[in-house]
Image 1 (cartoon, one colour):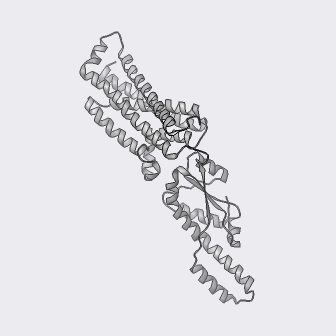
Image 2: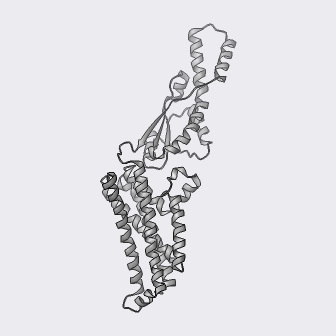
Image 3: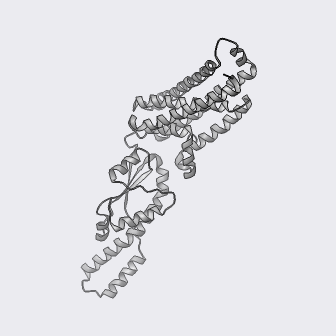
Length: 343
């Protein structure tokens, strides 16, 4: 990044804009952060920026961005253009006029020259040339909308499916099935773990079916990173199935569990990105989305199919999903011990 006073002035003005966070880095690291999905875009001001301004030449500025977040960048474009223009426009117009007057009218009076400069700057109509470069998804034949639809819909439908499995435990309690099973040699923990294992395998099967359907129907390439895809399916299935069982565990009756599950799943799916892409939402909701299973699952599949990241870059999201699943599982066991199974 250029370190001149003109660059620092632009950075200061950009930093004063709302909902824009600035991280200083070199061009290589900036592009890597955008590729990994850490930021929507990066403004790169190359060395020689101030020299270009003073010479009245095109400014070496480039904005690299993630094509999946074009709407965010589009909203940002006007603010960036006006900010760069206010800082760079005056300098480049002043230097251009000065060079022109010096070459064409070397003997011009200084007061006349100053008046011409003031008039030119006052009527400035300079628009800086910012090179816009998409660096994510350019080598990818998979359509962005397809990834969003498959991943978002799969997790949303999966939540409803496993919530139904959890609710069946309450239904069996109301029907007396659980009590009869407790009189058998089976332990209560065995019955509960069996239900949870069933929900887990149903989740894996449903996710696998969704992606196979996308492959057969929409020609979605599943071979981009098979190990990462398998681990993401397992981690997402574990987190979602555990959450579904937990939603049933906090309810007292089957009807209550159904109503509670519907409300929580719809809200979590809305803010987590299953229904609406995250970049459309306000920044506050984007931060709240971090608490949802949907967010980590969808972003993990984005990393695989859109950003084409290696397995080691996707592992943190897999570990977060596994952690969510483990916490929900332990909490569900404790709740079922007290309310249903009396283990």
